[in-house]
Image (cartoon, rainbow, N blue to C red; front, side):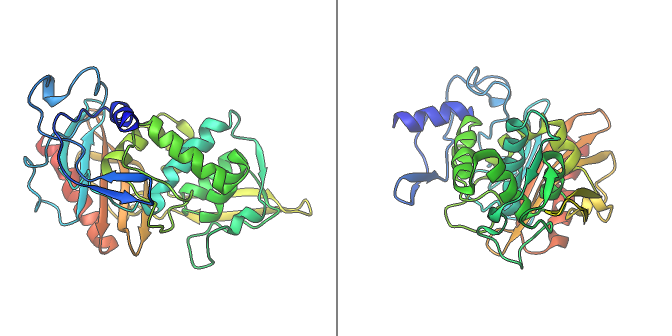
Length: 324
């Protein structure tokens, strides 16, 4: 119970009445589908409770939002600089993050390496837990790239191999890195998140919520290296092979906004994002946008059946910005 209360404080969420059910995960971890109950006292401006939720957007209830406004099962739009929730649908429900996981992998790598020009040589961990049919950057054992280049390989083509290489470079092994991911998630207040790998390939015990992803993106937004890599439409990295010769890998973004195939609504500018897909997670994306007044927005869409639906419904979400 003490541990649960601590997690709630870290997340900026005060539970004033018990609600929802608990689902036991892997014997010791619990996922709480409804972490916010009716708030009857101590509620400040815009429903936030200071100082617990200071500096955070808080979802008090989804009853005020039309669940049919977007077709995807999970959707969240937050004006980050004012901490206002503009739309929420299933934002506290359990979802599989797929490659949106790589935001945490990138954050930890950036926080660990003071110098992003540090060279890293890939080892046998490249292939750990992944297959040739998964999303890869083309990294093989013995190749050497800088951390900055590996971040590009991680976020631009969504390389699962790059995720493993960064994980081992930070923690010595993928397993130790996963422990670090979960520790960092708790520090960020992501109380309904558990990571099982650094890439987001499906695992029943690898889950999160749209609200927790919002908390993660807030931390990523502070890192220039993340913003730069996650905002690329295409790019290449050059490193060394085991024999000392050079090799260059070229990538294109997995993101329709970055490639210019999808245009946000008028008055909204795309900045950067991370996409994801597994059969269990569906098509998903967490993105950062800004309006003409330089307000910043974090948008999450998850569980779409197709990429067309994902971007169509995300644009519907973004249209709220002009109405607010």
